[in-house]
Length: 562
Image 1 (cartoon, helix red, strand yellow):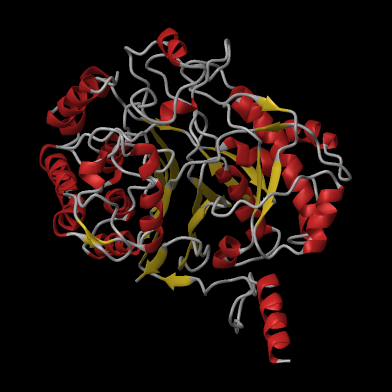
Image 2 (cartoon, rainbow, N blue to C red; image 1 turned 30 degrees about the vertical axis):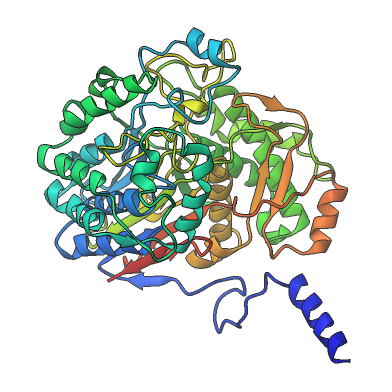
Protein backbone atom coordinates (compact mmCIF):
# COMPACT_ATOMS: atom_id res chain seq x y z
CA UNK A 1 0.00 0.00 0.00
CA UNK A 2 2.82 2.37 0.93
CA UNK A 3 4.57 1.65 -2.40
CA UNK A 4 1.33 2.37 -4.29
CA UNK A 5 0.90 5.69 -2.44
CA UNK A 6 4.45 6.72 -3.32
CA UNK A 7 3.93 5.84 -6.97
CA UNK A 8 0.71 7.86 -7.15
CA UNK A 9 2.36 10.80 -5.39
CA UNK A 10 5.27 10.73 -7.80
CA UNK A 11 2.93 10.57 -10.79
CA UNK A 12 0.80 13.46 -9.58
CA UNK A 13 3.80 15.62 -8.73
CA UNK A 14 5.53 14.99 -12.04
CA UNK A 15 2.40 15.71 -14.04
CA UNK A 16 1.95 19.06 -12.25
CA UNK A 17 5.62 20.01 -11.97
CA UNK A 18 4.94 23.52 -13.18
CA UNK A 19 2.76 24.37 -10.14
CA UNK A 20 4.33 26.71 -7.57
CA UNK A 21 5.32 24.99 -4.32
CA UNK A 22 3.45 27.65 -2.35
CA UNK A 23 0.27 29.71 -2.53
CA UNK A 24 0.56 33.44 -3.16
CA UNK A 25 -1.52 35.75 -1.00
CA UNK A 26 -1.77 38.29 -3.82
CA UNK A 27 -1.27 38.17 -7.57
CA UNK A 28 -1.65 35.47 -10.19
CA UNK A 29 -0.74 31.89 -9.31
CA UNK A 30 2.11 31.91 -11.83
CA UNK A 31 3.69 35.09 -10.41
CA UNK A 32 7.01 34.38 -8.73
CA UNK A 33 7.03 37.44 -6.46
CA UNK A 34 5.67 40.96 -6.10
CA UNK A 35 6.84 43.91 -8.16
CA UNK A 36 9.63 46.07 -6.73
CA UNK A 37 8.37 49.60 -6.00
CA UNK A 38 10.50 52.70 -5.35
CA UNK A 39 10.44 56.48 -5.79
CA UNK A 40 14.00 57.65 -6.39
CA UNK A 41 15.49 55.23 -8.86
CA UNK A 42 15.23 51.74 -10.26
CA UNK A 43 17.42 49.24 -12.07
CA UNK A 44 16.53 45.85 -13.53
CA UNK A 45 19.32 43.73 -15.00
CA UNK A 46 20.07 40.07 -15.54
CA UNK A 47 22.68 39.96 -12.73
CA UNK A 48 22.28 41.25 -9.14
CA UNK A 49 25.86 42.59 -9.05
CA UNK A 50 25.08 44.79 -12.05
CA UNK A 51 21.80 45.98 -10.55
CA UNK A 52 23.56 46.99 -7.34
CA UNK A 53 26.23 48.92 -9.25
CA UNK A 54 23.50 50.79 -11.13
CA UNK A 55 21.88 51.80 -7.84
CA UNK A 56 25.25 52.88 -6.43
CA UNK A 57 25.73 55.16 -9.44
CA UNK A 58 22.26 56.65 -9.01
CA UNK A 59 22.86 57.27 -5.30
CA UNK A 60 26.19 58.93 -6.14
CA UNK A 61 24.42 61.54 -8.27
CA UNK A 62 24.48 59.80 -11.62
CA UNK A 63 21.46 59.63 -13.88
CA UNK A 64 19.77 56.72 -15.61
CA UNK A 65 22.23 56.82 -18.53
CA UNK A 66 25.23 56.74 -16.19
CA UNK A 67 23.68 53.82 -14.32
CA UNK A 68 22.97 51.95 -17.56
CA UNK A 69 26.57 52.29 -18.80
CA UNK A 70 27.99 51.18 -15.45
CA UNK A 71 25.65 48.19 -15.22
CA UNK A 72 26.31 47.15 -18.81
CA UNK A 73 30.05 47.17 -18.15
CA UNK A 74 29.53 44.86 -15.15
CA UNK A 75 27.35 42.52 -17.21
CA UNK A 76 30.10 42.13 -19.81
CA UNK A 77 32.32 40.78 -17.05
CA UNK A 78 29.92 38.67 -14.98
CA UNK A 79 27.75 37.46 -17.90
CA UNK A 80 30.20 37.00 -20.79
CA UNK A 81 27.88 34.28 -22.09
CA UNK A 82 25.52 36.98 -23.33
CA UNK A 83 27.37 40.23 -23.85
CA UNK A 84 30.59 42.20 -23.59
CA UNK A 85 32.63 44.92 -25.23
CA UNK A 86 33.21 42.66 -28.22
CA UNK A 87 29.51 42.99 -29.10
CA UNK A 88 26.90 45.51 -30.24
CA UNK A 89 24.38 47.71 -28.43
CA UNK A 90 20.98 49.31 -29.06
CA UNK A 91 19.16 51.70 -26.73
CA UNK A 92 15.97 53.73 -26.42
CA UNK A 93 16.30 56.63 -23.97
CA UNK A 94 13.58 58.82 -22.50
CA UNK A 95 15.06 62.22 -21.74
CA UNK A 96 13.08 64.00 -19.03
CA UNK A 97 14.44 67.42 -20.00
CA UNK A 98 13.24 67.39 -23.60
CA UNK A 99 10.34 64.98 -22.93
CA UNK A 100 11.42 62.94 -25.92
CA UNK A 101 12.57 59.45 -26.90
CA UNK A 102 15.98 58.96 -28.52
CA UNK A 103 17.13 55.82 -30.33
CA UNK A 104 20.74 54.65 -30.61
CA UNK A 105 22.00 52.07 -33.10
CA UNK A 106 25.48 51.10 -31.91
CA UNK A 107 25.90 48.05 -34.12
CA UNK A 108 29.06 47.42 -36.12
CA UNK A 109 29.74 46.73 -39.76
CA UNK A 110 31.43 43.93 -41.65
CA UNK A 111 35.14 44.11 -42.51
CA UNK A 112 35.93 46.24 -45.56
CA UNK A 113 38.46 43.73 -46.87
CA UNK A 114 36.17 40.66 -46.68
CA UNK A 115 34.38 40.05 -49.98
CA UNK A 116 31.22 38.11 -50.80
CA UNK A 117 33.16 36.01 -53.31
CA UNK A 118 35.68 34.98 -50.66
CA UNK A 119 32.93 33.99 -48.22
CA UNK A 120 31.18 31.93 -50.90
CA UNK A 121 34.46 30.14 -51.62
CA UNK A 122 34.53 29.02 -47.96
CA UNK A 123 31.08 27.43 -47.84
CA UNK A 124 27.39 27.85 -48.55
CA UNK A 125 26.84 30.20 -45.60
CA UNK A 126 28.82 32.29 -43.13
CA UNK A 127 30.00 30.06 -40.27
CA UNK A 128 28.88 30.64 -36.70
CA UNK A 129 32.36 30.67 -35.16
CA UNK A 130 35.91 31.67 -35.97
CA UNK A 131 37.17 34.76 -37.79
CA UNK A 132 34.67 35.02 -40.68
CA UNK A 133 31.51 36.13 -38.79
CA UNK A 134 33.35 38.82 -36.77
CA UNK A 135 32.08 42.38 -37.29
CA UNK A 136 33.10 45.66 -35.65
CA UNK A 137 32.13 45.76 -31.93
CA UNK A 138 29.84 48.75 -31.40
CA UNK A 139 29.15 48.68 -27.65
CA UNK A 140 31.97 50.91 -26.42
CA UNK A 141 31.17 53.61 -28.95
CA UNK A 142 27.54 53.29 -27.87
CA UNK A 143 28.52 53.97 -24.26
CA UNK A 144 30.39 57.12 -25.20
CA UNK A 145 27.61 58.36 -27.48
CA UNK A 146 25.10 57.96 -24.65
CA UNK A 147 27.47 59.54 -22.15
CA UNK A 148 28.32 62.52 -24.32
CA UNK A 149 24.66 63.29 -24.99
CA UNK A 150 23.14 62.58 -21.58
CA UNK A 151 25.72 61.48 -18.98
CA UNK A 152 26.63 63.32 -15.76
CA UNK A 153 29.39 61.48 -13.93
CA UNK A 154 32.88 60.95 -15.44
CA UNK A 155 33.20 57.78 -17.51
CA UNK A 156 36.05 56.64 -15.25
CA UNK A 157 33.61 56.55 -12.32
CA UNK A 158 31.19 54.43 -14.32
CA UNK A 159 33.76 51.81 -15.32
CA UNK A 160 35.61 51.59 -11.99
CA UNK A 161 33.21 49.08 -10.35
CA UNK A 162 33.76 46.63 -13.22
CA UNK A 163 37.51 47.18 -13.15
CA UNK A 164 37.48 46.36 -9.43
CA UNK A 165 35.37 43.22 -9.92
CA UNK A 166 37.58 42.10 -12.82
CA UNK A 167 40.78 42.50 -10.76
CA UNK A 168 39.55 41.26 -7.40
CA UNK A 169 37.13 38.64 -8.69
CA UNK A 170 33.42 37.90 -8.39
CA UNK A 171 31.43 34.73 -7.65
CA UNK A 172 29.98 33.15 -10.79
CA UNK A 173 26.20 32.73 -10.71
CA UNK A 174 24.41 29.44 -11.32
CA UNK A 175 23.03 30.05 -14.79
CA UNK A 176 26.22 31.65 -16.10
CA UNK A 177 28.29 28.70 -14.85
CA UNK A 178 25.94 26.45 -16.84
CA UNK A 179 26.27 28.52 -20.03
CA UNK A 180 30.03 28.88 -19.64
CA UNK A 181 30.38 25.11 -19.57
CA UNK A 182 28.17 24.79 -22.67
CA UNK A 183 30.36 27.29 -24.52
CA UNK A 184 33.50 25.17 -24.45
CA UNK A 185 32.85 22.73 -27.28
CA UNK A 186 32.31 25.36 -29.99
CA UNK A 187 34.97 27.86 -28.91
CA UNK A 188 37.84 26.25 -26.99
CA UNK A 189 39.88 25.74 -30.17
CA UNK A 190 40.10 29.46 -30.94
CA UNK A 191 43.20 31.39 -29.82
CA UNK A 192 42.93 33.10 -26.45
CA UNK A 193 39.60 31.62 -25.38
CA UNK A 194 40.99 29.06 -22.93
CA UNK A 195 43.58 31.48 -21.61
CA UNK A 196 40.95 34.08 -20.67
CA UNK A 197 38.01 31.94 -19.57
CA UNK A 198 39.57 28.60 -18.59
CA UNK A 199 42.73 29.51 -16.67
CA UNK A 200 42.51 26.33 -14.60
CA UNK A 201 41.82 24.13 -17.59
CA UNK A 202 38.04 24.33 -17.07
CA UNK A 203 35.29 26.89 -16.80
CA UNK A 204 34.60 28.37 -13.34
CA UNK A 205 31.91 26.63 -11.29
CA UNK A 206 28.91 28.12 -9.53
CA UNK A 207 30.09 30.27 -6.64
CA UNK A 208 33.73 30.13 -7.70
CA UNK A 209 35.65 33.42 -7.72
CA UNK A 210 36.61 34.38 -11.26
CA UNK A 211 39.04 37.13 -12.27
CA UNK A 212 39.75 38.72 -15.64
CA UNK A 213 42.77 40.97 -15.24
CA UNK A 214 43.13 41.45 -19.00
CA UNK A 215 39.62 42.91 -19.20
CA UNK A 216 40.38 45.10 -16.17
CA UNK A 217 43.38 46.54 -18.03
CA UNK A 218 41.30 47.10 -21.18
CA UNK A 219 38.54 48.92 -19.29
CA UNK A 220 41.08 50.99 -17.39
CA UNK A 221 42.59 52.12 -20.67
CA UNK A 222 39.13 53.06 -21.96
CA UNK A 223 38.34 54.90 -18.71
CA UNK A 224 41.57 56.90 -18.86
CA UNK A 225 41.94 57.50 -22.59
CA UNK A 226 38.34 57.54 -23.78
CA UNK A 227 36.50 56.07 -26.73
CA UNK A 228 39.44 56.33 -29.14
CA UNK A 229 41.53 53.96 -27.02
CA UNK A 230 39.22 51.21 -28.30
CA UNK A 231 38.76 52.33 -31.91
CA UNK A 232 41.99 54.16 -32.74
CA UNK A 233 44.46 53.32 -29.98
CA UNK A 234 46.25 50.33 -28.48
CA UNK A 235 43.11 48.20 -28.20
CA UNK A 236 42.33 48.66 -31.90
CA UNK A 237 45.91 47.82 -32.82
CA UNK A 238 45.83 44.65 -30.70
CA UNK A 239 42.54 43.52 -32.30
CA UNK A 240 44.09 44.15 -35.72
CA UNK A 241 47.24 42.18 -34.83
CA UNK A 242 45.23 39.29 -33.37
CA UNK A 243 42.89 39.00 -36.35
CA UNK A 244 45.72 39.12 -38.91
CA UNK A 245 47.60 36.43 -36.96
CA UNK A 246 44.56 34.16 -36.91
CA UNK A 247 43.09 34.35 -40.40
CA UNK A 248 40.70 37.21 -39.71
CA UNK A 249 39.68 40.27 -41.72
CA UNK A 250 38.56 42.79 -39.08
CA UNK A 251 41.20 45.54 -39.20
CA UNK A 252 42.38 48.67 -37.48
CA UNK A 253 40.79 50.71 -40.26
CA UNK A 254 37.42 49.03 -39.74
CA UNK A 255 37.53 50.05 -36.08
CA UNK A 256 38.77 53.57 -36.82
CA UNK A 257 35.94 54.13 -39.31
CA UNK A 258 33.19 52.93 -36.97
CA UNK A 259 30.35 55.23 -35.92
CA UNK A 260 27.08 54.78 -34.06
CA UNK A 261 23.88 56.43 -35.28
CA UNK A 262 21.21 58.31 -33.36
CA UNK A 263 17.95 57.27 -34.98
CA UNK A 264 14.26 58.00 -34.54
CA UNK A 265 12.31 55.24 -32.79
CA UNK A 266 9.14 54.14 -34.60
CA UNK A 267 5.81 53.27 -33.02
CA UNK A 268 2.36 51.84 -33.40
CA UNK A 269 -0.53 52.44 -31.05
CA UNK A 270 -1.98 49.37 -29.35
CA UNK A 271 -5.33 50.07 -27.68
CA UNK A 272 -4.23 53.55 -26.53
CA UNK A 273 -0.59 52.74 -25.75
CA UNK A 274 2.22 53.80 -28.10
CA UNK A 275 4.71 50.94 -28.39
CA UNK A 276 8.16 52.07 -29.57
CA UNK A 277 10.87 50.06 -31.32
CA UNK A 278 13.94 50.86 -33.39
CA UNK A 279 13.80 50.45 -37.18
CA UNK A 280 16.01 47.91 -39.00
CA UNK A 281 18.72 46.65 -39.15
CA UNK A 282 17.05 45.29 -35.99
CA UNK A 283 13.83 43.26 -35.87
CA UNK A 284 11.83 45.51 -33.53
CA UNK A 285 9.18 46.43 -36.06
CA UNK A 286 8.11 42.76 -36.14
CA UNK A 287 6.68 43.27 -32.63
CA UNK A 288 4.66 46.26 -33.88
CA UNK A 289 3.49 44.23 -36.87
CA UNK A 290 2.30 41.39 -34.61
CA UNK A 291 0.47 43.80 -32.30
CA UNK A 292 -1.26 45.50 -35.22
CA UNK A 293 -2.51 42.11 -36.42
CA UNK A 294 -3.63 41.09 -32.91
CA UNK A 295 -5.46 44.38 -32.34
CA UNK A 296 -8.11 43.17 -34.77
CA UNK A 297 -9.02 40.31 -32.41
CA UNK A 298 -10.83 40.58 -29.07
CA UNK A 299 -7.79 39.30 -27.22
CA UNK A 300 -9.23 39.96 -23.76
CA UNK A 301 -12.34 37.94 -24.53
CA UNK A 302 -10.27 35.09 -25.94
CA UNK A 303 -8.61 34.75 -22.53
CA UNK A 304 -4.98 34.27 -21.58
CA UNK A 305 -3.66 30.84 -22.51
CA UNK A 306 -6.72 29.91 -24.56
CA UNK A 307 -6.55 27.95 -27.79
CA UNK A 308 -7.87 30.86 -29.84
CA UNK A 309 -5.37 33.32 -28.34
CA UNK A 310 -2.36 31.06 -28.87
CA UNK A 311 -3.48 30.14 -32.39
CA UNK A 312 -4.12 33.76 -33.44
CA UNK A 313 -0.79 34.87 -32.00
CA UNK A 314 1.19 32.17 -33.79
CA UNK A 315 -0.51 32.94 -37.09
CA UNK A 316 0.16 36.68 -36.68
CA UNK A 317 3.79 35.93 -35.91
CA UNK A 318 4.13 33.90 -39.11
CA UNK A 319 2.89 36.82 -41.19
CA UNK A 320 5.19 39.33 -39.47
CA UNK A 321 8.23 37.08 -39.73
CA UNK A 322 7.66 36.44 -43.42
CA UNK A 323 8.11 40.19 -43.94
CA UNK A 324 11.08 40.12 -41.57
CA UNK A 325 12.72 37.53 -43.80
CA UNK A 326 12.01 39.53 -46.93
CA UNK A 327 12.90 43.09 -45.94
CA UNK A 328 14.93 43.57 -42.74
CA UNK A 329 18.52 44.69 -43.31
CA UNK A 330 20.91 47.66 -43.11
CA UNK A 331 18.88 50.69 -44.27
CA UNK A 332 22.05 52.24 -45.72
CA UNK A 333 22.00 49.52 -48.39
CA UNK A 334 18.30 49.17 -49.18
CA UNK A 335 15.00 51.01 -48.96
CA UNK A 336 12.97 49.21 -46.29
CA UNK A 337 9.22 49.96 -46.27
CA UNK A 338 9.07 50.50 -42.50
CA UNK A 339 6.06 52.84 -42.54
CA UNK A 340 4.02 50.35 -44.56
CA UNK A 341 5.01 47.32 -42.48
CA UNK A 342 3.94 48.95 -39.20
CA UNK A 343 0.78 50.58 -40.56
CA UNK A 344 -2.72 49.63 -39.42
CA UNK A 345 -3.90 49.44 -43.02
CA UNK A 346 -1.27 46.83 -43.88
CA UNK A 347 -2.32 44.69 -40.91
CA UNK A 348 -5.95 45.05 -41.90
CA UNK A 349 -5.10 43.73 -45.37
CA UNK A 350 -3.18 40.74 -44.01
CA UNK A 351 -5.40 39.72 -41.08
CA UNK A 352 -8.14 38.02 -43.18
CA UNK A 353 -5.56 35.44 -44.27
CA UNK A 354 -5.51 34.09 -40.71
CA UNK A 355 -7.71 30.98 -40.59
CA UNK A 356 -8.81 30.45 -36.98
CA UNK A 357 -9.48 26.77 -37.66
CA UNK A 358 -6.21 25.83 -39.33
CA UNK A 359 -2.49 26.60 -38.95
CA UNK A 360 -0.86 28.15 -42.02
CA UNK A 361 2.13 26.48 -43.65
CA UNK A 362 4.15 29.66 -44.00
CA UNK A 363 6.98 30.36 -41.70
CA UNK A 364 10.33 32.07 -41.58
CA UNK A 365 12.92 29.97 -39.79
CA UNK A 366 14.97 32.85 -38.41
CA UNK A 367 17.68 32.27 -35.81
CA UNK A 368 16.51 31.49 -32.30
CA UNK A 369 19.88 30.53 -30.83
CA UNK A 370 21.85 33.30 -29.19
CA UNK A 371 22.07 34.77 -25.73
CA UNK A 372 21.85 38.44 -24.89
CA UNK A 373 21.40 40.78 -21.93
CA UNK A 374 18.60 43.25 -21.54
CA UNK A 375 18.61 45.88 -18.80
CA UNK A 376 16.74 49.04 -17.90
CA UNK A 377 17.32 51.94 -15.51
CA UNK A 378 15.36 54.96 -14.29
CA UNK A 379 16.21 57.96 -12.11
CA UNK A 380 14.45 60.48 -9.86
CA UNK A 381 14.26 63.10 -12.63
CA UNK A 382 12.26 60.74 -14.82
CA UNK A 383 14.98 59.66 -17.27
CA UNK A 384 14.63 56.04 -18.40
CA UNK A 385 16.94 53.80 -20.42
CA UNK A 386 15.99 50.66 -22.33
CA UNK A 387 19.25 48.94 -23.36
CA UNK A 388 20.14 45.66 -24.99
CA UNK A 389 23.60 44.29 -25.69
CA UNK A 390 24.92 41.04 -27.12
CA UNK A 391 27.76 39.05 -28.66
CA UNK A 392 25.24 36.84 -30.54
CA UNK A 393 25.29 33.06 -29.98
CA UNK A 394 26.17 33.48 -26.35
CA UNK A 395 29.93 34.00 -26.18
CA UNK A 396 30.19 35.09 -29.79
CA UNK A 397 32.76 33.91 -32.31
CA UNK A 398 35.23 32.36 -29.89
CA UNK A 399 37.91 34.71 -31.23
CA UNK A 400 39.43 36.09 -28.02
CA UNK A 401 42.36 38.53 -28.04
CA UNK A 402 44.02 37.18 -24.91
CA UNK A 403 45.64 40.47 -23.93
CA UNK A 404 42.28 42.25 -24.02
CA UNK A 405 40.10 39.78 -22.09
CA UNK A 406 36.93 39.58 -24.19
CA UNK A 407 35.40 37.62 -27.08
CA UNK A 408 34.62 39.22 -30.43
CA UNK A 409 31.02 38.92 -31.63
CA UNK A 410 29.81 36.75 -34.52
CA UNK A 411 26.94 38.94 -35.80
CA UNK A 412 28.19 38.56 -39.37
CA UNK A 413 26.70 35.08 -39.40
CA UNK A 414 23.30 36.70 -39.90
CA UNK A 415 24.10 37.93 -43.42
CA UNK A 416 22.96 35.70 -46.27
CA UNK A 417 24.20 34.92 -49.80
CA UNK A 418 20.85 35.37 -51.58
CA UNK A 419 21.31 37.48 -54.71
CA UNK A 420 19.31 40.70 -54.53
CA UNK A 421 18.24 40.17 -50.92
CA UNK A 422 18.50 43.29 -48.71
CA UNK A 423 20.54 41.34 -46.16
CA UNK A 424 23.01 39.83 -48.64
CA UNK A 425 26.57 40.14 -47.40
CA UNK A 426 28.61 43.17 -48.45
CA UNK A 427 31.72 44.81 -46.97
CA UNK A 428 31.22 47.67 -44.48
CA UNK A 429 27.56 46.70 -44.00
CA UNK A 430 25.55 46.13 -40.83
CA UNK A 431 23.97 42.66 -40.64
CA UNK A 432 20.34 41.96 -39.77
CA UNK A 433 20.19 42.17 -35.99
CA UNK A 434 18.07 40.28 -33.48
CA UNK A 435 18.55 42.43 -30.36
CA UNK A 436 15.85 45.02 -29.72
CA UNK A 437 15.02 47.36 -26.81
CA UNK A 438 11.41 48.52 -26.35
CA UNK A 439 9.52 51.39 -24.77
CA UNK A 440 5.85 52.31 -24.27
CA UNK A 441 4.35 55.76 -23.79
CA UNK A 442 0.81 56.72 -22.84
CA UNK A 443 -0.55 60.10 -23.94
CA UNK A 444 2.99 61.25 -24.65
CA UNK A 445 4.31 60.30 -21.21
CA UNK A 446 6.84 57.55 -20.39
CA UNK A 447 5.09 54.45 -19.10
CA UNK A 448 7.21 51.35 -19.67
CA UNK A 449 10.82 50.49 -20.49
CA UNK A 450 11.20 46.78 -21.19
CA UNK A 451 12.87 44.06 -23.22
CA UNK A 452 13.17 40.30 -23.56
CA UNK A 453 16.42 38.56 -24.51
CA UNK A 454 16.88 35.69 -26.92
CA UNK A 455 17.22 35.78 -30.71
CA UNK A 456 13.98 35.48 -32.68
CA UNK A 457 12.18 35.11 -29.34
CA UNK A 458 12.37 38.86 -28.78
CA UNK A 459 9.63 40.42 -30.96
CA UNK A 460 7.30 37.55 -30.06
CA UNK A 461 7.77 38.20 -26.36
CA UNK A 462 7.59 42.00 -26.75
CA UNK A 463 4.10 41.58 -28.18
CA UNK A 464 3.11 39.10 -25.47
CA UNK A 465 4.30 41.38 -22.65
CA UNK A 466 2.24 44.28 -24.05
CA UNK A 467 -0.87 42.10 -24.36
CA UNK A 468 -0.34 40.68 -20.86
CA UNK A 469 -0.36 44.21 -19.46
CA UNK A 470 -2.98 45.87 -21.69
CA UNK A 471 -5.41 43.07 -22.54
CA UNK A 472 -5.09 40.72 -19.58
CA UNK A 473 -4.50 43.31 -16.84
CA UNK A 474 -1.41 41.67 -15.38
CA UNK A 475 1.01 43.60 -13.22
CA UNK A 476 4.61 44.07 -14.31
CA UNK A 477 6.01 40.94 -12.63
CA UNK A 478 3.07 38.77 -13.67
CA UNK A 479 3.46 39.93 -17.28
CA UNK A 480 6.98 38.51 -17.32
CA UNK A 481 6.28 35.37 -15.31
CA UNK A 482 3.25 34.32 -17.35
CA UNK A 483 3.76 31.20 -19.51
CA UNK A 484 5.03 32.18 -22.95
CA UNK A 485 4.38 31.14 -26.54
CA UNK A 486 7.29 30.59 -28.92
CA UNK A 487 7.01 29.84 -32.62
CA UNK A 488 10.16 28.73 -34.43
CA UNK A 489 11.03 27.40 -37.86
CA UNK A 490 12.52 24.05 -38.68
CA UNK A 491 15.90 25.28 -39.94
CA UNK A 492 18.11 28.32 -39.73
CA UNK A 493 18.96 30.03 -43.06
CA UNK A 494 18.43 33.76 -42.64
CA UNK A 495 16.30 35.29 -45.35
CA UNK A 496 14.56 32.08 -46.38
CA UNK A 497 10.78 31.80 -46.14
CA UNK A 498 9.86 28.30 -45.05
CA UNK A 499 6.68 26.51 -46.06
CA UNK A 500 6.32 23.90 -43.37
CA UNK A 501 4.56 25.78 -40.57
CA UNK A 502 7.39 25.41 -38.07
CA UNK A 503 6.99 24.46 -34.41
CA UNK A 504 5.09 25.87 -31.45
CA UNK A 505 6.65 25.63 -27.99
CA UNK A 506 4.59 26.36 -24.89
CA UNK A 507 5.95 26.86 -21.40
CA UNK A 508 4.79 24.70 -18.53
CA UNK A 509 1.47 26.01 -17.30
CA UNK A 510 -0.39 25.40 -20.57
CA UNK A 511 -2.79 22.48 -20.12
CA UNK A 512 -3.01 19.31 -22.18
CA UNK A 513 -6.50 20.12 -23.49
CA UNK A 514 -5.17 23.33 -25.06
CA UNK A 515 -2.21 21.48 -26.53
CA UNK A 516 -4.43 18.80 -28.05
CA UNK A 517 -6.71 21.36 -29.68
CA UNK A 518 -3.73 23.25 -31.13
CA UNK A 519 -2.48 20.00 -32.62
CA UNK A 520 -5.92 19.43 -34.16
CA UNK A 521 -5.63 22.83 -35.86
CA UNK A 522 -2.38 21.73 -37.47
CA UNK A 523 0.27 23.11 -35.12
CA UNK A 524 3.31 20.93 -34.44
CA UNK A 525 4.19 21.21 -30.75
CA UNK A 526 7.73 20.76 -29.50
CA UNK A 527 9.42 21.29 -26.13
CA UNK A 528 12.02 24.05 -26.16
CA UNK A 529 13.54 24.28 -22.69
CA UNK A 530 15.38 27.53 -22.00
CA UNK A 531 14.39 29.23 -25.27
CA UNK A 532 11.69 31.56 -23.94
CA UNK A 533 13.93 34.55 -23.31
CA UNK A 534 14.76 36.69 -20.31
CA UNK A 535 12.78 39.76 -19.23
CA UNK A 536 13.43 43.01 -17.38
CA UNK A 537 11.11 45.99 -17.08
CA UNK A 538 10.49 49.30 -15.31
CA UNK A 539 7.04 50.90 -15.31
CA UNK A 540 6.40 54.49 -14.22
CA UNK A 541 3.07 55.35 -12.64
CA UNK A 542 1.64 58.10 -14.84
CA UNK A 543 0.19 60.02 -11.88
CA UNK A 544 2.61 59.61 -8.97
CA UNK A 545 5.84 58.99 -10.86
CA UNK A 546 6.52 55.93 -8.67
CA UNK A 547 8.57 53.21 -10.37
CA UNK A 548 7.64 49.53 -10.53
CA UNK A 549 10.38 47.04 -11.41
CA UNK A 550 10.33 43.42 -12.51
CA UNK A 551 12.97 40.89 -13.46
CA UNK A 552 13.20 37.50 -15.09
CA UNK A 553 12.64 34.48 -12.86
CA UNK A 554 13.95 32.12 -15.54
CA UNK A 555 17.43 33.55 -15.11
CA UNK A 556 19.63 35.23 -12.46
CA UNK A 557 18.20 38.75 -12.72
CA UNK A 558 17.24 41.33 -10.13
CA UNK A 559 15.09 44.43 -10.06
CA UNK A 560 15.85 46.84 -7.22
CA UNK A 561 15.17 50.46 -6.34
CA UNK A 562 15.56 53.00 -3.59
